[in-house]
Image (cartoon, rainbow, N blue to C red; front, side):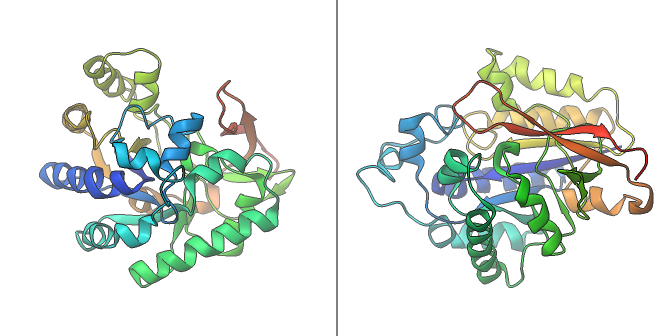
Length: 294
């Protein structure tokens, strides 16, 4: 019984404060995890002002960060957070790519063309290689808000896997009728942030997430957290979630471990669904219907 932890790290404060807290808690529980990184300009202030960062009001939003991208220059996460990112990597945690400019991604990805996505993708990959000495082996779109051409870029770079979708189990994606040979490891559980946004109290939200994993999936579960939330003021709830999942018999691992368990020869093909959620953000991507003939 595997449950993979994917944690988004999308701002300087989440990197500086949330990431080390999460590393300490994960090490105490003996858990693996994958950290999905944004490495470019931190426009937290702009995201907060326009409502395009749902984690902002729940996380580590300080006064200075509200100015980044507004009345203050936007710092570069990969530069300002270099030592913290390297320390998490050296501690044995899997680091993968989320993107470059999280705010601009969540603002524009719904309309961005392939050349624009490819340009940001390449910039982020270069910075990742400078930080960790190798290109990223995997990619995860922030909050499962992707672009259709992103799937083909994953294939072009020969990634081990991607995690751009919500869904039920791993699959090969079919985009606009074209099979893409980069396996998707979809998020199967809601995030703590989503439950908080729906009105749940913090402790009740943590218990709800433990309860939702009661029925193990054949290929395991994937939880997608946020370093600004799970590693911020709700760290105690995240700690409780880790304990509860372990009590249920789950081994808490990174996405790479989940990927190694897959038999790619029998992995099913599924379409990609796009589902608006009524927010100001681009729609989320979901695992769609199966293609039995592929």
